[in-house]
Length: 214
Image (tube, rainbow, N blue to C red):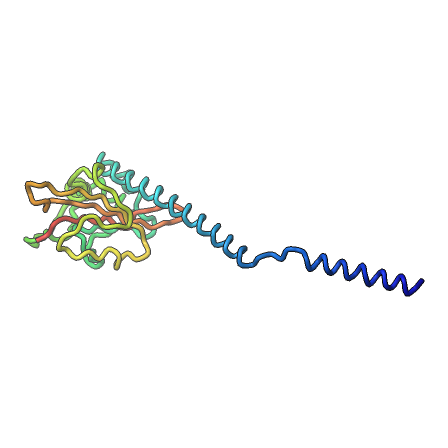
């Protein structure tokens, strides 16, 4: 009787092991692939949201410039890095005019003249108030009707474009107005904004104009 009980125990143990062995084993490769797929979807979603946010802030900055609401424009300036203005495609960190958010808000309402750079060709210094520079140079055409692009250059001439070297790992928008046929399309203009994220919001760190240069 004792031997019979031992035999039955061994038999039941063997059956249990067989069932355990027959259980489906999780596919590690499939799990990794699924994780990558999920991560990929999340990345695409985040990228899409980023593009929407950048287009929105780009359009809001343009609207502030168009309506000459420079107080509203000041709200887009990076709180810590400020904003740099470049008259042409070539960004010169040592010479281009840069304002902290505080200084911009301080001097924007005043008639204080600033040197923004030098005119291409003549080399004459361009001096103007903040309001005049924004209204006459930065927004010299209605860029709200321009062709838009994100992190892609649409306009370009013989002026060196070093945006990506000066502002690596940042996002920039371009607002491009094609030149007219009567001028051989050489009167094109483009306005670029460079943005950096700060505490979940995109702020301006650079405003760059570009056009045909001699």
